[in-house]
Length: 294
Image (cartoon, rainbow, N blue to C red; front, side, top):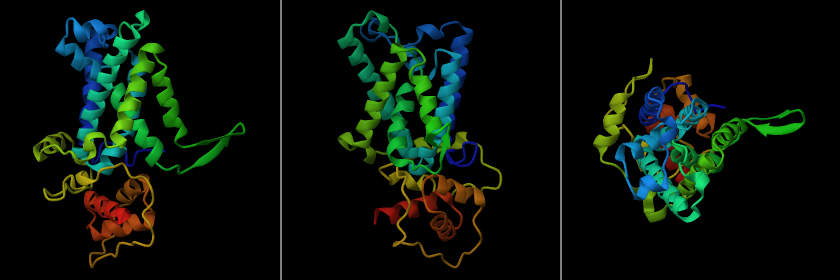
């Protein structure tokens, strides 16, 4: 199972986040300060350090956490491809802020000496992403190992469990707070899924991404066209609402079809949408989502 084509095609925000997380983890690791980056009650209420607050959002506290964390962040780029960079940026900000508030509240209420410093890293974003992953990403393959039935999604769950229990209580609490934040986003608390950043914010991240070979850059009008979609869809488009192909009949690239199929759409319907959108994958995704909502 994968998140579509390799690389960060149509996922510039994910690319920027992964780079920031990896570089900051290496930087603080070289300085020997990784173990002191996590949130603590004292830092939150007595001597707030802005740099430490920011670092705790991006930098992991150990190499194993970095490996599993970056793997999950890389996989979850599929959600940015589904809802667009603009809406995904809102999802990131909401997940980070809400999960951090939950962590501070938990530290205040529990007063557990073993939770003096929580583990650092983007636990809020990673475990918030498990909510749409569970509900909206379909199982594409099932197989048995030693008599146990598992699916292709099982590997993502195993990586998440490894990260969740990497530092025991210090990592379990941020993971739970992330799941709570993701649940609130899915419930559309304060109508969060209708909020959009100004266009220049998503455009800034788009400039950070390198174009993929053989793929024409999207036009200004179609960039982030799926940013208005308020959820993480993962089900097939209903066959009773087909998309009729126009006169443009150039066969879509197999890579683009694979990307749409990885989002849960039917292959034939995805191909028709790409033909209708003149092989613009963002516009094709928007057409598929609109067809699904009708």
